[in-house]
Image: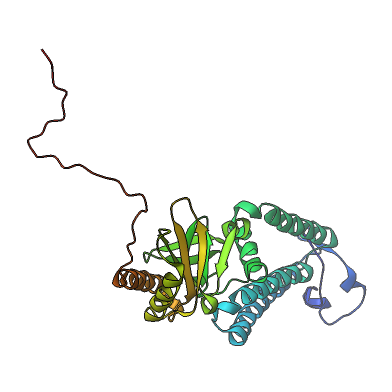
Length: 298
């Protein structure tokens, strides 16, 4: 392996004699390459490695102090830390005692490795890391939002670099890889603007002017503010009414929706309005001894 000398790489007799000796290129197998050269090369390499580790450690401490452990800033912190590590590795290759030919080969290998890592990132941890960096600026995801991914509805609890963790209506925790969230259709509902709704179908014989105030009263009883009643659909045999508004406790969306359903039932039943299918079917009663078999005629 060929090395470039530095002031500390000269033979002991030449340490104090500047001149053409400093420009020589030594080979570890050359007769001019002494034990002093080897020790100086090792010391220089160790010093660079210690300085690199210290720089990474200091950068990590500094970023931790600036950004802390707040989840909203973790992506920025990870991205900056990755840039610092890459910069330190690049400087190591530049400063280590390689010959120009060896340094060029190492730099080429470093560039190829980095390019291959990025090219294969779609199915690797690096792909999730890159997707995690893009989730916030593209989807504007935040903890506390309600999210629907592939038909799964839940509240975002944690957004990490590699995954998004949600809690469903049943209290289950589901983690989606960052690449999955980035590449699929996502429905968002911020907690501060969350809206709940429920629908009920009634017959045409029920006066709509009576239904609307009853549904508004149900919303008030359930703690729903800004309630609005819509005629969602006019079907062949019924009218579908929908009431929606903002819950009093956005962090408990499912509980608020359940209270609204209970209140709708109580108000409509209390007013004597039947919530049933408008198709009325007549039924005939038979005794237990009756057998549904044809009578055989002789």
